[in-house]
Length: 140
Image 1: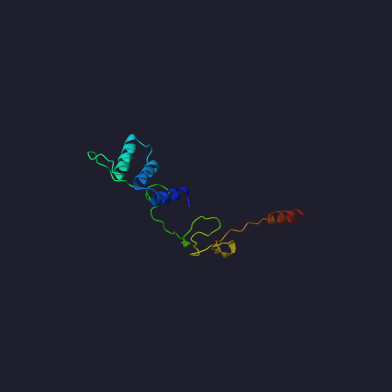
Image 2: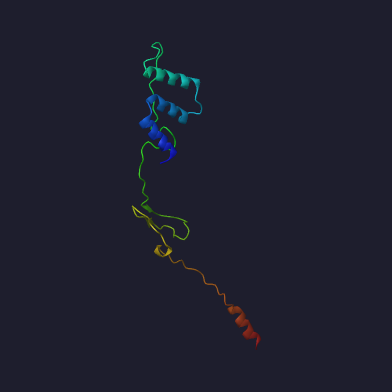
């Protein structure tokens, strides 16, 4: 569990709403202002029956998952099942597909990859047949 997740669990389970609101403000704002301090003080006093009836007290907004970047509100399991129509991926022929196991680990080795289509290639004579014909003519 990440530190951020631990903080969220702590604020949800162990802190009163006004304290969780204070943590939310600290994590989501650039600055903790005098207005924030005054609002939290009014929430605390109101909770204990010490509030000033002439001033309105905003209700606490406790920290929840999704309020802070890096702590998604809903978690989803993402499974990569296949890669299709690949292009220019190392030694994998263009247009190929790879299927993956839905659970566990998929190992891809070169002998499992499809061979690229045969392209006609021009042949190149690397033996130097031209020099052989020249030597036979010069011997005459």
